[in-house]
Length: 402
Figure 1: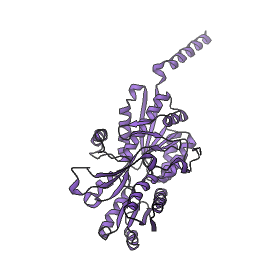
Figure 2: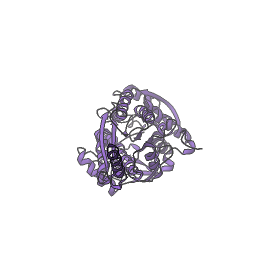
Figure 3: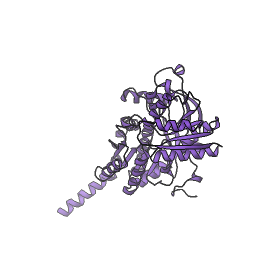
């Protein structure tokens, strides 16, 4: 009799599992790992968590039988802290994917742990192009931008406009090194030359001595291979030394809308920069950004936060299509399915994990040109995806078949 009960219970369970309505009852746990208290908090931080929640809301996950939980943590821009959190999330807390991760040194560490644990990492915040180059893995997608695209955009534009001699202020960690390397390649390829470079402590507050070296170099362009608070401080202090007034140009190789907001248009005007997303591009980006700003103390989204939304949305579409959250299955779906969302439009994910979309070259408006809060950019050019990102033919990624 006991055996019959066991058989009946097993049959009932099998029938339930085969039920189409319940087959999609999938629970996903996504971790937003970023800087929540330091120099990158404004460009990522809580705003990235808000963006992730909006992705779940817009996907209508609950209606589709997919339960999504969002957790978050502060990696403090330290690879050891980020690594510890990633391992705990994967090993003990049941996290399926990690999103955002600005600070390339932390991202490269999380990239390897994600491969080791066979989970998924959708990076929006880090810049190093090595994430889809020599450090690429089958488990990571690099979503929003990278050092190669920044160099192609800002570096290429400045050289073509006559800025053919450069001096770099470089944040002394993986991101800064990669950005200086990729920008140098573009500068020399376009006939320019690099007169020198100085490595600055990360994070830094006083850039005076480094800016004086750059000023003394007589380079036409001072390339800021830094980001967030470091960029803001560099530009403010350059203004105090009268560097731009003296005829040298500043190239902010990675500048975010949040940086321009912090600087103010009076200080930031004329900066040329490259972004993957701008809130005021079209009706769709404006509508989404308005919703975001209401949840983010009135602050408009950065491209990093927009990338978290876009990346998680595509992941959830892949889970739905695959009817599974198995890593290999979902990653295959994410690369097979075209991407499409209101912030980045249509795109693809390449074999090396590089998300492909257009990039944009902007110039920061003069105060007299701005029509209101957060109206900061005028568009100079569109960089088509195939020109913005490193071609697969030049890739060092072992996943790429040559």
